[in-house]
Length: 380
Image (cartoon, rainbow, N blue to C red; front, top):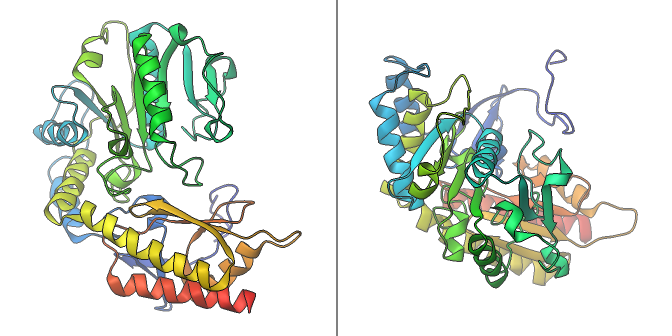
């Protein structure tokens, strides 16, 4: 497939994946691959979920796209669901296409409603493929791993704290509760607002609806993407009632061709329905604990894993480092030979594990056995 411009910076490992079912991918020869990434962390309720497929078909046969000047009842119904699960009662929602768009719009809204340009986030945050950090003069970065304080940050000039509750540039690190509480209290007492970037941590991924639920807070703006579309390109921004009222709709404008499309809204609504009716968020927490327990058993048995960490079905494994040798790469090659797809963070010894919340028990067993086999072949 030499004519395809693939994801820059990533190797193409499989050329002919032709179909998928829940956590399994199939190539043109009929071989199955266990997808422990859920695509790009998107298929929260499994590849080709039949209820989502049905919802797409029924909506597509009626109306998929609308313009700026008219709405569809499906969009209103989906907005109500978003506000209910975020806890932003009487707020407002705008549906978009991607997580990058959602974060970008959230940042723009925060600057508009506060009249400020300065932003605060953690030093290891990844907020947007659009280059939200291009103007470095507008950003302050807290390096929480090195215990840096907020003494040098002009809090009265900060529009918003953009909180990423767990991804940490893909390395799955969770900021301490006390630190986040201190930051949010300081930001709000100085007139700033709180944005939660839930692109990777939302929709049940961490065993709660959203990553911020682990911190006992309700943000002013929530950016949601990836898992809300289960592979379909839809995202959204949810604003609190207070933040929504502060938007001057005469002066603040945001135009995107597919905002509030009924097809994307219908998909988002169905994903929420499935998560609720099948109790997948509670299940994700339990399944995550089973996987972590098994990985810690392998850690203790072989002594080659430095750390296993995670919440729900969002996990990371740090492999021991050897000078001049990427041990994780060797393990990954063994996994690929067993048709296990797992993310190894670029230029690191860290794996990410983000399977669909619908992962079957037998697939968990297959992954654990394959991972232990790969480790044993590399280290014994």
